Image 1 (cartoon, rainbow, N blue to C red):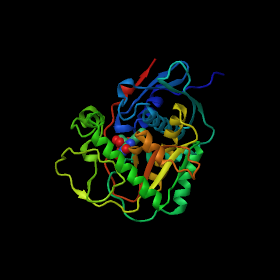
Image 2 (cartoon, rainbow, N blue to C red):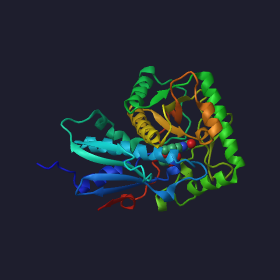
Image 3 (cartoon, rainbow, N blue to C red):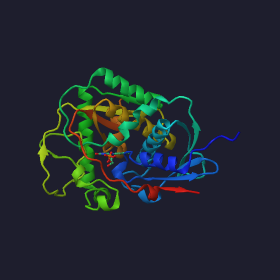
Image 4 (cartoon, rainbow, N blue to C red):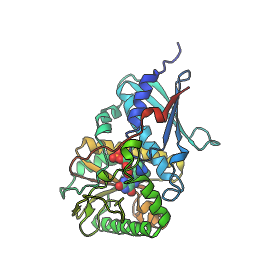
Length: 326
Ligand SMILES: Cc1cc2nc3c(=O)[nH]c(=O)nc-3n(C[C@H](O)[C@H](O)[C@H](O)COP(=O)(O)O)c2cc1C
């Protein structure tokens, strides 16, 4: 008997869930193609959505696509399908990131339980309270990263302060580079986000920091944002470093899946989250982010966790723009 393949409608709805994933500057650098006959779903990078200045190696792009892949796996699992992922199938075609096939699952995989968090997770650039995140919750998040082959570590207080210094330095580097500023301005606060379904609207910038160092990127830079308030951010933020043991495209895709698994689990745990890759975008600062005492290896993302207000979703492109069937 031939192996059943999912129908196009099901795959389309999984892709819709995949696109709720975080991506650098909300560029949504993914394209999905489903071949109905073979039941193979190909994930490719969208060459028009690279960031030559802030992401020259496309590391961030791979991380975003990995996150989308994880959402897809969760959405498929929820409807009783196991997604089998083959990463980077063709050496000679680096734009092809993964091929996914689906087999009916006997029992629902554990990741299906994460499904409600896909729509609930948003990057929050609001201040969090100073309430401590329980150790058991942090342990669970480390376990989520480990299940995807990555490591999530929680630096101690002095290390967090050192990380905030590095983020500050990265912000300074950004301000000194007109090319970087131009690239960020092209994707953020343009006022066209709702119409185009992409980019970070100024309503998602969060408040300007009142004083000190905020663990959050200020996408506004020196640009004025009408009606923007200022606020004091948490003094001792709960920051986690997601790391992999190697540092190639496959590891970045793996890191993206691990990152999304952590974010979805954190969302289910009632936490607000934000991402910060600012210091990781400058090679010398990224190196300094690496903790020589830990097994984190290569830092791929800084994740901020805590308790904060609900925030609104950012726009997405229509599924028809990123999904086709052959
Ligand atoms: C690789 C990568 C790097 C990111 N870097 C930052 C960052 O430095 N600062 C920030 O505020 N958000 C960062 N983000 C979050 C994106 O801006 C966010 O996911 C996107 O705007 C979509 O919004 P959402 O997460 O609320 O869906 C990053 C996301 C990814 C995947």
